[in-house]
Amino acid sequence: MTRFQVMVVALCLVMNVVEGFDILVMAFAASGVAAEWHLTASQVGLLLSSGLIGMALGSALVAPLADRIGRRPLTLACLAVATVGMFLSALTTGGVQLGLCRVLTGIGVGGVIASLPVIIAEYSSRRGRGTSTAFFAVGLPLGGVVGGTIAALVTAGYGWRATFLLGAVLSLVTVSAMAAVLPESIDYLAARRPAGSLARMNTILARMRIAPLDALPAPVDRAATGVGRNVLRGRNGIRSVLLWVAFFCLFAATYFAGSWTPRLLEQSGLSAQQGISGGILLNAGGVVGVLIVAALALRVAVTKLAVAALLVGAVAFGLMTMALGSLGATMAAAVLVGLLVNANGALLYAVAPSLYPVSVRTTAVGWALAVGRVGAIVAPLVAGALVDAGWSGRGLFGLFAVPLAVAAVAVAGVTRLGARRDPTPELDQQHLPPAVSA
Image (cartoon, rainbow, N blue to C red; front, side):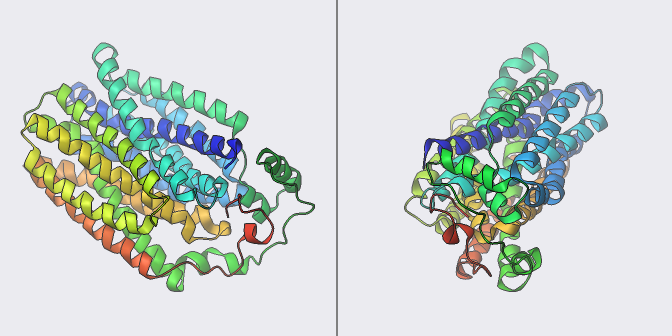
């Protein structure tokens, strides 16, 4: 990969870090919000889920527009929406207002996160595609580490609103920087052929040290590359359903752990500061997990890695049920849980784009993420209701070990279906050098 390709991957990582902060900061602000507005656990769970509701809407309804208008303009627009949502969140005076602002933020984040793995896959070399996409997934836990650290330092002195305001400033800086340097997807330019596509493609190819094209690739048959044929019907439809199940179950477990760990640690006898520290360690473990799978992806198929990591993740949740109550054991278990759930997120992000052709890739990945967001929405709500009903942290971590095992079965099913068979050859195999991924 050239320096330009590495830069594109790095830019996507930076964007994901900022968006990870925007989403996970609510978990660290939850105690302050609940204390100021005297909220119940169920109401806190609804606030935690409100951003995820927005993410589901963004992934399902906004992200597919990238296949029509381009990856770059959609990404920039969604970043702008997330920035506005964070600014407004800092100004709210009640739970309903904050919930609506979190939905708005989530819509922007959902559109961005669905587009970024596709951009990374398309700009990565074939050998480095799984590793690059796995590196992208480090953004969410890294954003959580940053968010938790800032929450611990800022909330005590300035209140929970300051964390949202800081997130808005970071988002504004990010969207300004991305507007200056983020390129369009070459595969989008070749497939959709907007005005000036050839000149734009050759400019990008020059930065990748690849000879220019004399003409655009021949257009492909739209009927053969439509959503129905490549996402919803036949073996492709079965593959999509299994992928949706995997994302739903993984996101349910991941967002339960990310949203509720700080408060559950408090309820198990730790201090508020120790609860925040546990949340930070969970996300720090996620960073380590993503780096590990990024290295392993160079040698082992990502689908096989995902099945193994999902099963081990279920075991990690079981260990957390035994560790709660002991400070040292709880912190160690939090690192392990974060390591595994985020490693699995990285692996599914790497698997999903490879299952679909260019013409429907962002739509298909966006839909899979939207189904995943439903799991992410349901999990904090269910956890809040169960806490109000008297459930302990031990019971909840044991309950959410089950979805990880189900996700492992679903990914194994995707593997058994075999490689996707495209109705038309890959664009880069016909017309572009191997460095450009399609």
